[in-house]
Image (cartoon, rainbow, N blue to C red; front, side, top):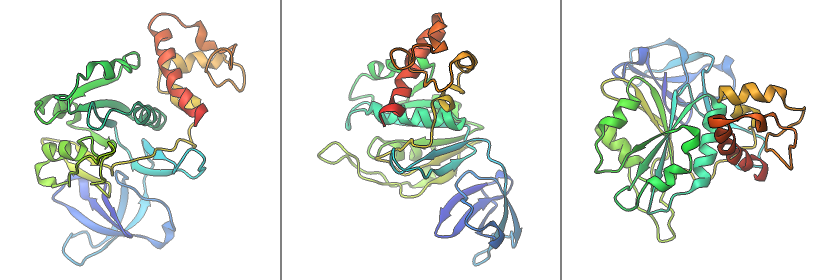
Length: 291
């Protein structure tokens, strides 16, 4: 698995063992094939991991999941920045800086479209009540965990153990602080929030870190924008079995937003919990149409 990417060199661990790490270059036959943290690759050459040795990446295995974004909502070029993660831990501060629903919605869309299970991790819960913010996403059945610096780590570790989890969040929300609590030897830089309520960028490169007793966390750089030009409404709905089945009866070209834009959308026939989920998912889909 690829655990670091830095200027044409990839750090890889053998057999998911953090003690067996090698540095590799991309073989010429792969051309400019993007290789990102989380990718599973085949290596040849010197696999000793000794200083000044270099292996070669000769094959990129098929990805199970992908986390991707565009530079903005008009950029057609998508950039994969995490591969094969099981979960996306969206780190949000409930205060200082104020929570930004927009980023959470965009991260949820990217997770659903990429095949990851999203989880909300709320930090700085000592400064504000997290319940009102979490309630906005209740009908999506997303797991919400407290991740403040004074809250116990056990519930978080339970969710992450045995899985590959990507962490995502705005700068200044406490993501690097959380990573340092989970993996004390990581030594990830932490930053303060500026006077305008925006965090200073701290993590500058994605890196996969081993989690005790098992599993990996991928710390991604703090972000300020999350383009979604590459995602279609059906990509999001595919994450919900009841909704994806229902839209098979939608007319061609339906964007699944309901009246007046889509007066014949089959999602309007659903009832009960599924109907509530439709309302919540349509809130996400509206981000795509207004982007």
